[in-house]
Structures are given as structure tokens and as C-alpha cells.
Figure 1 (cartoon, rainbow, N blue to C red):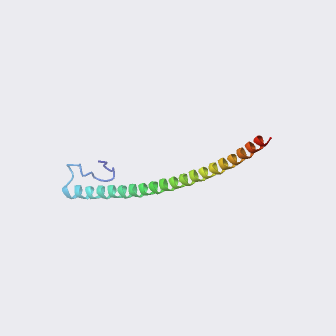
Figure 2: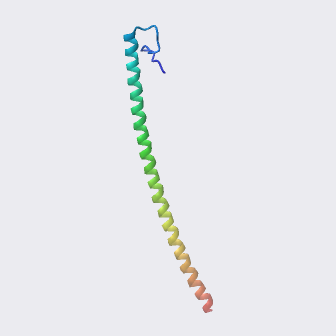
Figure 3: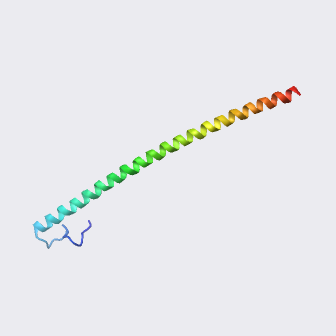
Length: 88
């Protein structure tokens, strides 16, 4: 565990029990704050990932629709050209 220079560490066996307990409580509070910070960061990253995934899905769908429309137009043009060729 990390001992902070301005505080006693609960690993310090030479400290009196009350000081060790206070150092332990302080260290616990520090770790609890780090845990809360990490949870908030994880939630933020998770939300950003979900938003990016939705954006990607929308972009993918738009590209698929554009591709389908272009393919439909090309098929129409091929049909018209084939009709012109067979007419001639």
C-alpha cells in the first residue's frame, strides 16, 4: 500500500495504535475516493463508448442506404441500356 509522506502509514509498527488507526482511516478514505473517481471515469467511458457505437451504427446504416440507392440507380441504367441495345 502507498504511504503518504505527510501521514503515518498503518504499516508503521513503531507508531502508537491510535496514530496507526488514524493513518489507516485516512488511507481507507483516500482509497474510497479513488474508487469513486474510477467508477465515475468508468461510467463516463462507458457512456462515450455507447454514444460512439450508436454513431457508428447510424453512419453504417446511412452508408448502406446510400449504397442500396446507388445500386438501384445502376440497375435501372443497366436495364435501360440493355433495352436500347436489344432494340437496335
